[in-house]
Length: 440
Image 1 (cartoon, helix red, strand yellow):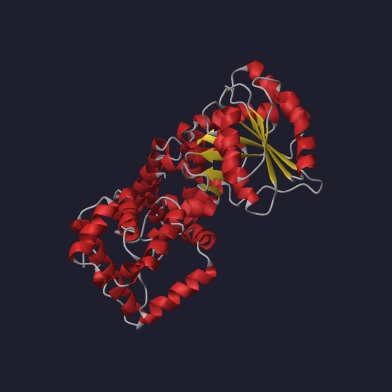
Image 2 (tube, rainbow, N blue to C red):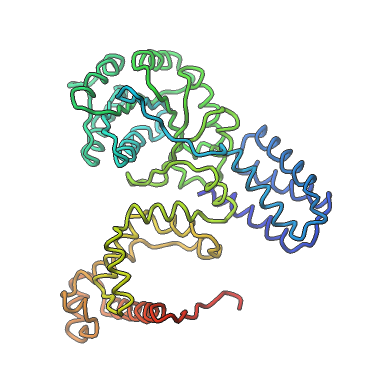
């Protein structure tokens, strides 16, 4: 996520830390580097100009020449201005005092709108709301079926025409009645994707909007389209008065132009981001956390929240007790690994950790290796999982055959698990295991 921009910022600040106190000329040089990095990230030119002006003004006013740590001062200023550019504060959808709350999604064809509807329904459903998905995308033949499949996976009802085709305005008109019949207090309407230059389809969108009278109208935007996403947002806002944006495919966006341009140009906040292909890869957009990730500072709060959503508190306490007693087994190891995988792609989790070396962030994480580990452990008997020292000779061959791996793979896992056990015993006894530090 925004890897190219993060790398540029890390290089700029790395060089900055090597200097002593900074002169006005040094500040101007740093500002030029940041300007170039933002332009290469496809950030809107006007946004870049305003951002650099604010950074330079604050840097000069801070009197960096007398600062004990001018590099930290500059980083602090850039971070705060990035937060302001991204929207300053976290925004969330409000619910209507007279249910149902109606949310209408609009967007270009291929922006990921239907998937975003399913993800949003799942996200808000887990917060206690009772969503109804409405299929008002009657242009694309597979759209209704796709929404029905998503609804089935997340156990959310879907309202759609009985036959293919039909009038999206009529579907929208019936949506509130269907929500009342099913006792749903949230309606999420998936409209057809359309080109923002197609006046006929934009008129249809206006009619759907007028009939629905939604409490929130959100534009779903593909983050990988860069600052073109801003032009799209302006066109849709003129047609239906947007309340906010959902950025999809942000995990594949190495530049960040859409995220950094959208709020300042359109005035519309980014409410949610799609962070992967799975239905759970969907988060509230936090400007401060995103700014920290862009600057390579990690995002521990999001990582903690994901862990809290995934891990059961009682199970976590029981596992901690086993570690203290030195009773951590391969069964526990397998359970913990499965819980971590539920939190999302490992590459994404590594990116949220502050202080992780660039080499580790860039390293390819082979999710298939985790599947291999799971297969090996699942091929063991309960007794072997509790006591891995039993795995020798014919047992090793049996496990390798049952898991589709080799005896060498089984040996490697057992060796790694033994090291994990030793480390946990050291931690439990109050001894800190020696961790090698690169370069020392």
